[in-house]
Length: 360
Ligand code: ATP
Image (cartoon, rainbow, N blue to C red):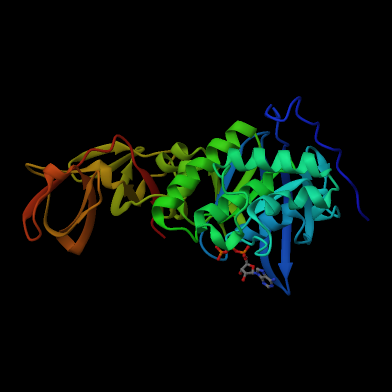
């Protein structure tokens, strides 16, 4: 059985952004491949115009979740809805989603302009209107002057911009991005990441962004859903996930943390140099305490150790210090605080509160 979603209302004029994206809901979604559970009890809501990043290690089910929303995978059970309507059984071309994948997947025998027009041709939009809308989208992604080139005549970053323009030209309700930046070099990746965010905000388009790169997820998303083994481990605003990881998995996956053996007494964590509150409720007993590298400093006294590694990272320097019991502690600091490898140093922890997890 197939069903069709209502047409998205046309913008008042070609340059007027459509104000609202769709809402999206996954409810108890399971997907099995020959007995292997790629998704299990997967629940996720996207608000209208929200950008949610699905973040997680390889094989945790990110792409399967995205493809289930696209209609490229049939879910085994559960519901997927767009604007409150169950789309299970609705074919991809009727779900009103735009997609950009890791591989640029442009048609090599078509020009940039023709690539962008493609979806409109399929919808039998008249030639002049096609040309106008494609040109508008190419302007939006900053490629207004490259329309006549063939796909292989533009760079990788430009090809992904074309793919984005092609995905957006039909004014979909939902944009699906599956590792769209991972084939690009670091500088282009950051530029395009910021561009995607700008365009997504400008169009208010509800967006699901799949990535295994935590920095990317934290930088672009309104909320980040950390996935593990087919389900969502924690979802929250980037700052919230970073400051208050709910589980050991999230603490170790999102950002860099020093994992220190510690103890909780009456909700306070005993760290070298003092006690600080534990993030969230926590029973007394031995715990792993997660201390961010920016919350450790070189000090006059404190935890003694020897500098083992120093790496320049642009705005900051990252040092690794070997302390008693061969515990390695990573700290990020300004370049003028740099200490040479082999130096005997002391460390202090400046965190106001730390995330903890029970030691199994
Ligand atoms: P990656 O970051 O490596 O792309 P992912 O989180 O996107 O990983 P998925 O591609 O969703 O992971 O795959 C989830 C699980 O389902 C994996 O164990 C994968 O091997 C399995 N899987 C995916 N597609 C199929 C398929 N067509 N047949 C069988 N198993 C599959």
